[in-house]
Image 1 (spheres, rainbow, N blue to C red):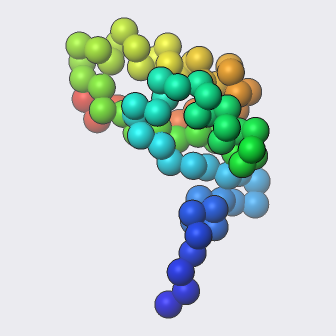
Image 2: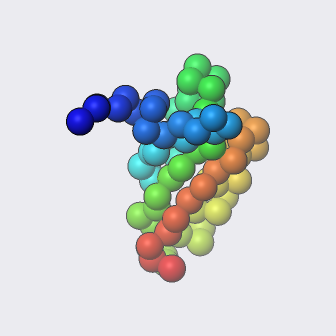
Image 3: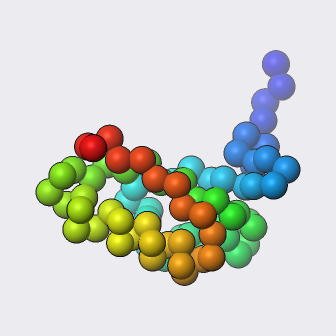
Length: 80
């Protein structure tokens, strides 16, 4: 069995997609590091927001990370 690195598991010939936690979406520096240093062009954030805090924060944070880094942001919210 061949072990793969994180970069090999999450890369495609056109996209490099790191998987982060929902808390990480709050920090623009983290996303900036992924996009500039590691050349990621799709950021994936599974969400843990509930229906109380979700509408106030989740969509705004998604848009912010996409605009900050000029990349695609993919999210999933299990509370919906």
